[in-house]
Length: 148
Image 1 (cartoon, rainbow, N blue to C red):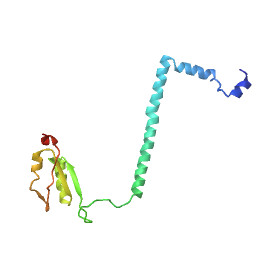
Image 2 (image 1 turned 135 degrees about the vertical axis):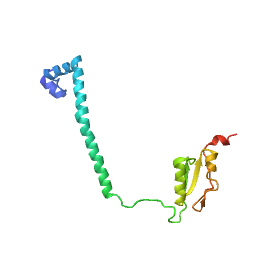
Image 3 (image 1 turned 45 degrees about the vertical axis):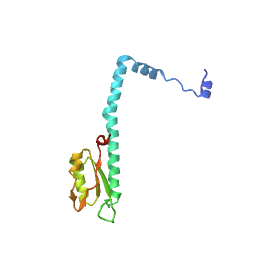
């Protein structure tokens, strides 16, 4: 193929003999293993930490800018204001966090629908008066006891 034909077809010219020798050398067995080790070590020790620092700086700057320009008011729902009746359904009210949350929300004026897994859990609320509010609605979570 003449040089004029190569210019017209715009085919890439083959790499030079030095590039071909390096390519052949890097694909022979002991050198390819060493080259891959050097390549991945460079990525792991130098490139990836730099990318991590860039992500860290970006996220910290976004957080700082959101802190500076965010609204200073808090959106807190208070059941005692605005004459709104608010209800909350809480599961797991037999013991622990669900039980404590039930008592806390009733104290703030919410209508609470406690969901209990066992009948013993439901019985602990019977007749309880929480700050002038009687919990009357119980939702059983264990439906096996109601199956025929």
